[in-house]
Image (cartoon, rainbow, N blue to C red; front, side, top):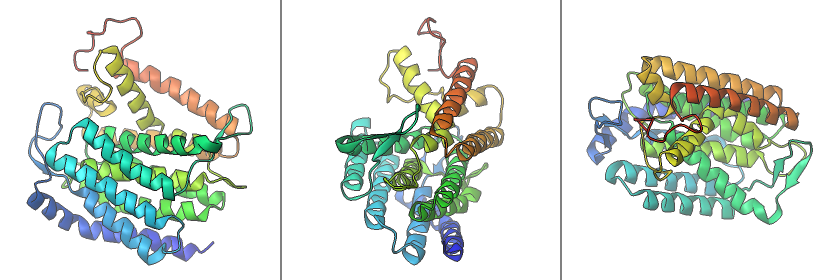
Length: 347
């Protein structure tokens, strides 16, 4: 393992993203990438949303300088660019849910056709389920899910950026532990880009990720786990990133269930996500971001400790899921089963 290469990649991604964030902020204003206040938004004044431009530039710079020999780098960068463009267009023109998903689908399809695929799923009872022909649709579903998971939680300053950094750091550590150096380098670059942007995004934010940035980080995390899940002697089971991202995964599941309970389309936006409910309880944006970092740090630590024990990973994920589920009902993210669907007035 070339330690200097990993350190250099991290520093370049961090420095390039940090240096380009002010330029991305000015570009966002000029391009009309502005998050206007509305009843569902936290911001009280218009905010530029071009953070994804800086993150992509930092990622690409580090990848070209240090990661030129990474497998699938070309298709990963192309798909990341397409995801960013779709998000930027949505930030600018408010695309319909159907158009936005179609764009995501096309970008991910390109990635999965020419990039890596998830070839197995861990069996909670031991061993692996090898997917065969199902590898293509399972990888599509996984990448699309992570893209939208990270976009769902992007509601307060620094939340998605910080969680993405912690997740990338955990995936980098695990990939190094398992000698999956390609996945580790991709994770180090992603983590560096996220950390380089965090000072501009943490409360009080100077620049928002926008849909482009949040979807981009979700895609890059999916690419790391997909690259690390290639069949071989040392692999990152897909249960591991699920555990690392237990908080945003729970938020997504609650959002889908909440909308089913209220009889509205699952993609319809509302104001009952994790961060919304904690804001309603009186926590500040910094406190909520710090709590999210802590939860993600704990779940990431659990993933590291159980990485060689597929059954234990699933058991820990299930236990955390039950705790999160109970907490979600307590703060009003979802309604207890059997309650009247109109009881949640904010959903």
